[in-house]
Length: 326
Image (cartoon, rainbow, N blue to C red):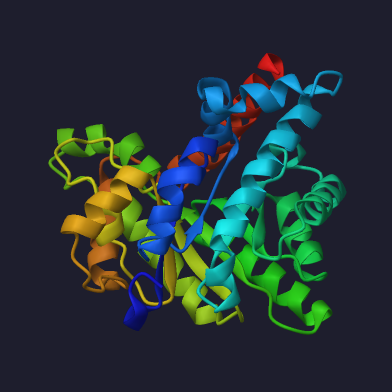
């Protein structure tokens, strides 16, 4: 744990081969991070921009584009899992996540099949299969946990999504017969980036909507008390230079939670951030903020739904770009 008394974990939201061989090991050994996450956009930037993949890709001639992608991604996930294994073995997380093909987000059985295949091929117990929180995804989450596969439920913006994920995990574990580690990834800063310009124009305080929304969802997850299941705060990098780079880590510190953040954000938090618990936030404060938002004509549910839709499209587009180049 990064903060033991809070049971708070800090995971790096980044995968790239040279980084895994060098800086990642140091961050793990220094007890600054105890896990890692990836997604199609992260792999796109790594594979297309880093020379570290050139030799392996040259050896994969004759394979389909998706087979090439999986070979490269699986190698990196295995490497990260092996570095994190000592943490996993002593019960200090040590997980790394890999996402299923985002184009399968509306197909339960295809998602389950790919999740099982990836988990078996990677052949590391400290791997989480990342599944988008869609109608098909909830059923897939249940089926994967029912065979003991750890799951990272991703692209959560609404409380209802978190409830469906937690229920799926609970039902899956009942079938499996014991606890399975899972996380519910709540996306934060994207909400503020979508709304803050409108809030400034109406003299409503900015950089709070994502945090307040996450606090509500965090409390719901905690109240459901699903064994092995935690809230994970994602999309916690800062784009607004007026905020400290560690803003979305410091402002989301909560008991029994995870924050996955860019490496530079993690370093800034480690050096300068407060370790004081912040969540949960008083509900009256949260309600007042959302009342003000509604009063200026913003329908928050529509905003959140657009973020879900856009998030899926971003992952699909990143995956498509990788395959086109490969």
